[in-house]
Length: 280
Image (cartoon, rainbow, N blue to C red; front, side, top):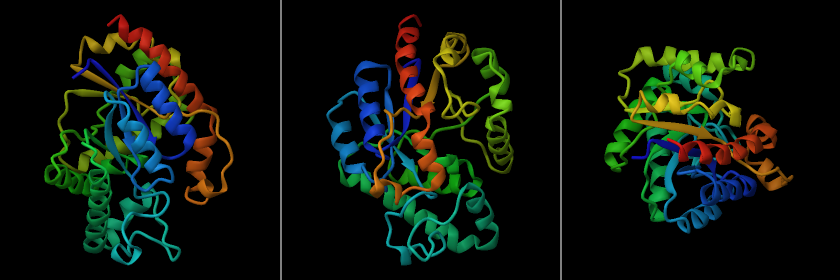
């Protein structure tokens, strides 16, 4: 495996995301992309991804945005009356305590369906991660481990970031003011309630998720002396253009994120990283 792998999440979310991911792979340093099986531009992402023979494609499990792959009456605990996913991250955590058996069965069925959709398109799935990092929820992680074994998927993203190691690299405390630290602490807290997955890949960075600037990664070489491999997660996209059919399939949070200038900044980061990786 490469010393540094760079993964783009949300492949298939929009034309702007798809185009930026393909360009960042061809001309930048992007090595992996994670596909949203239920996204509006999934088919376009698959077609473009298959034309890039060195781009590793994984699955970005989604249980919080848009409509599921499954028929709604097959997963009643996960959808609202209109057939859209009804929970966010916190709702999925709490849902387990109120309806353990049903929600566990429904989540297994839907994730299995999402994986099967990629396989039906002849995609060799290189890894599993998730939208909103819902796979860090203890009971969902158990489900994903079972399905990774069932479908022979070799890697599940492990969010094992060390606060102090990352701060040394970024030399920025912005995560303490924009909510990054809270996301980090919630995931660390959840890890106390399940057996953690083991990985020799260092994940960078949940602390600055969606806000990784080129300057944050210029000192990444420091981590390569301590870890076999580093995964950098990015959310690249070109400037968003309004599309009503796309808006209808996204939560307001996802739509705002799609419009964010940080996506364009993270696209630029792919090029900054390319020069850095050359020197490692």
